[in-house]
Image (tube, helix red, strand yellow):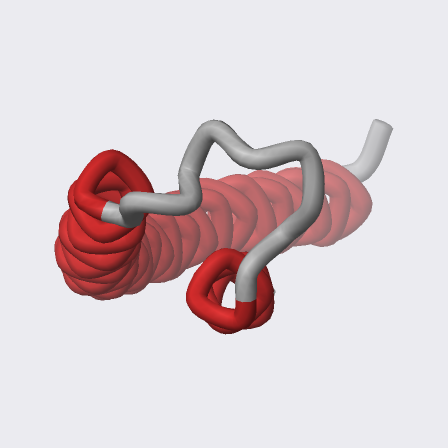
Length: 108
């Protein structure tokens, strides 16, 4: 084989090695960039999830407190109605007195 042909084949092989090496390095750099981007997105999503859960828990606690206060208020009203019923002199009668009807209407 001729020296010129060997030189051309050697140069072609050298160029092929450089192209393959550049391609492989580009693939590796692309994977690394994608991994970094993915990790950043996942961290942002986790932070957003934690914030949403914290807000939901605060809202839940406010609602629970409001329901507890309303329950206590209703218990107080029922207790007042019960005390009035026990104090009613006509409480044991067969018919309802006007006070008894008012107390029943207050429950609604």
